[in-house]
Image 1 (cartoon, rainbow, N blue to C red):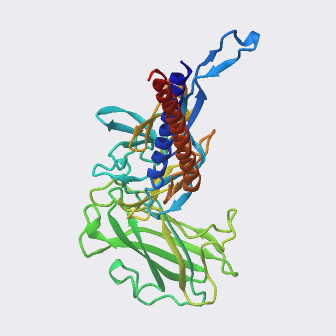
Image 2: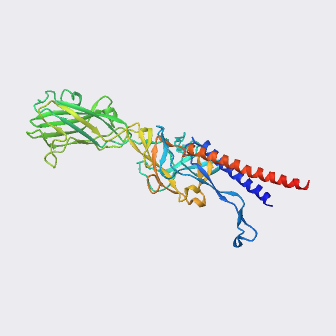
Image 3: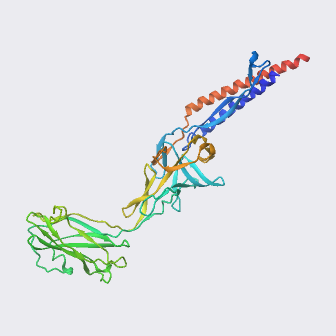
Length: 433
């Protein structure tokens, strides 16, 4: 009977309106969930029934209601909000962060747009559920080798020391200075010199050694220099006794330009690599291809040092990390050095809206989504990583409220179908009375 069919048809309308309201409610509930992607319910008409005589004779067809076709994910970009926290990451564009670990009792690899990350006690970059962020590890020199992806351990890094190999000095030695009357000796270095400067150098263990460089005028346009350090830091040395580790000469022309420079000596730091080569760069003499003006000059002005530098450093502990737009995690160390510790990876899919929601802001791969293609940010169709920011939910509350009203009205209208059919059936039952 058509009235009974109308009841069932109206019931499908009630169910579809309820499902629509359920999807809308889920979106509204997650309006403030980081990285959340909203959904929408797509409906289709149910099977149609041909009337007596069929469509060919004009009987036509009668619909049998509505059914849910699919709940479709909407993967539009959410707004980015600055947090200032270095390990908070947002994706500007396509792609998903890759995390690995146990979720809801199942070990696996999951994908997420929620970049609320932190560093655990073992130094691994993790999400708030403890799943480890996946990426490309870097070696001890900061080079990312190969395309292998694994857990990113960035919080326990240290920086090995580098032995000094070169000392660079820029200065001026007073042209009209007179030769000191005190003969040169390491014990009377200050009195026997016209000028001095100092620099801290490091051995292969990262131990610091203060090196004092003394300049003594020996004649017109002629100088000698001596590099001293405390003998307590040298193999076979005596603590407190200034010990010469290098010496040489400097020669200048009438225009104050360096024309020649010599150097010799041996540096044997205690307990470290011996001997340690240590080059002293006082400029490029005019006798070669230099100008004689890029290091130590001899002009009439007072003796003064303008620049001293060396290329070594002590060991260092990790003080902070930062992450750039390509996902490279850069560590800054207490010795002033920095290097790349790894690179956060992003995954892309041919059909990302076919991923399966797993709860906890996580998705899992499905046959319909295609396999994950993992690589660096800002490559292929993967977006850029924005550090110190988070992606907000892409839910538009105004639009959801409109859909909520439409679902409510649809439910009310379909209920009228049921009540009307029920009234007609009740009228039919009274015919026998």
